[in-house]
Length: 419
Image 1 (cartoon, rainbow, N blue to C red):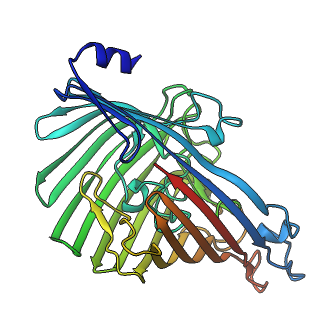
Image 2 (tube, rainbow, N blue to C red):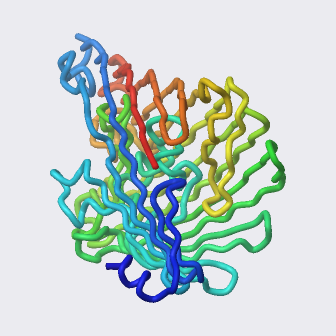
Image 3 (cartoon, rainbow, N blue to C red):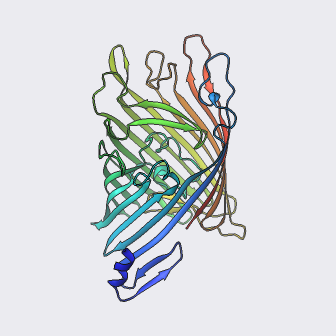
């Protein structure tokens, strides 16, 4: 329908295929394009052995091949374009359509227009928070995002519905603000989140980029909205989920409960080496009771990450997002990248008297070391290999008893095709 309208409204149009099929009118008033991506993952998990000194938990409850095998992680079809200054994007994930039918399977679905120096967006999109969170799934360095993203701190709240405004104040300084419902299409418009992100580039040269940023957000949920909670997943996509707290879980908590989060980020890319890290501090309201009183929880999460292109390519910085992307392969055999990350998340209020994690133990912490190799043989094709060394530490259930640990390791492989 959009194609017919566009061709009828202009005298001439051109068709290109670079980066995906695209139709564009000669006067620039109409443009529409189709893109896609598919991510096929293979997983092999190596559960921890049960310890006779304490009850089995986490991966110790799995059999050897409970979660091994293939899964279609993503199969996106993306329609983007412009009609007389109004931009739009509609993106559906067919890989989850069987378990999350349309419109729940929609990822980004928005319209935007220029307002002043920036862009005003209305619809469903990612809230402006976090370096790794805002990076495209096609361009994240490792297969899974760290605990400072919707894989942890913002659990289940990646694509939300609302309004946002993003702009560059100067060539090296930008910001984004948003007010959104804690829901996505197909759910009642309940709960609310508001916040924003600021990005500064003290150094911005070819092959030499220093990125600094911070973001703040406040998510207030109710019984009909997505929950304000923190759940860390260790061992890859098919690994184990460890709850670090749920706002409003305490008996007697009010109807609406909030999560307040501050996150700082830094990255430095020089030549073929990129270093980055983030630290997030989040407060969950009314997660538990202590002494008959409602109590809040404080959760901290951070990671440090490094990646290096053996074949000499430089990471690409995408100023419109305030995030890094991946370069085109420059050599005959493509680009080869090595990467590693250390990631930790914990609820600092967990102890034998207070139990916001609902483990009945003295501690609530997850650590993940991820090692990865990426091969880009051609533009739009990537093969990824990740190895996870993980530890969930929940402390002891009684003074004098042994500290309980779950040490899961896993291997994941991804075939990624995009255009």
